[in-house]
Image (cartoon, rainbow, N blue to C red; front, side, top):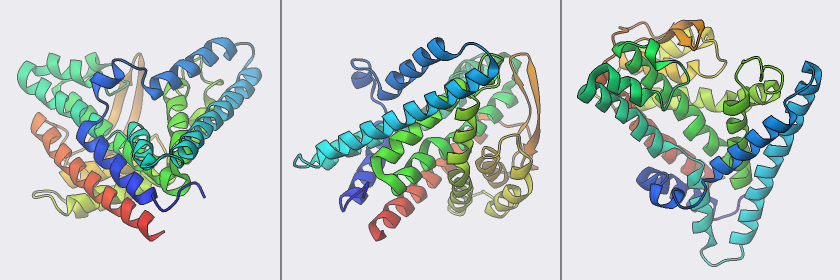
Length: 321
């Protein structure tokens, strides 16, 4: 088995650790963060192998996907094997798992966008949102900044919180580590620039595959979280999920985005600007588009509810298993 009787304690401790301390600067300012090390490896492979004709790049990109994913899973297995031999080693495993979850850091980054809009206006909002979105912040007005931050909150709840825990439930720490590798590969190589269209194709498609179930689970958890939030509209959230999510450009991102938008009574996504490219995306939700800092605050309350419900469900399910 990839997990044992301590697995529920490992997962519960990992979620709690991440919620309380996230990625502490005092630690990762002194030693390299594992995801940064992984990113360095991917960057090195990209520079060495991303060349020649498209067919060769496709094949090499696939080999990089396999190599990095298997390596991450193997390192996860090594950590579990070692910690199994140490008294209270499950605490070390829990810390390693917490590094691969992004509850607190996502909350902090999205909250900074609301604070930036309130304290410094559009310039402050743009500066803060630039840390969490890939689009050009200079092309966003203040409402666009608000929408972009909520979209990021929704999408990253799915692939930064729900998905790694989903793969932990199936395969323990090795599964979580492998998922993080795939997600990092996609973020670094999966974009459709000319230099990565072929080399990153395998990573992009595999990332879509491993996020397919978690994205849909996340949507229903968000709607459930809205049931415990004053002023939210869980019924509209559920309606938006089924109506709008299939219209999104991404096979996965629309599910949590539609759930957030419908539950909050707003509309997000829609046409977006990435560099010189305009993406004519569908709107998620049919509410107002003039999103404000107060709406970002409401989205964070919904996010916290969703994280709590998700953690309770995941730990209970693993205990039952």
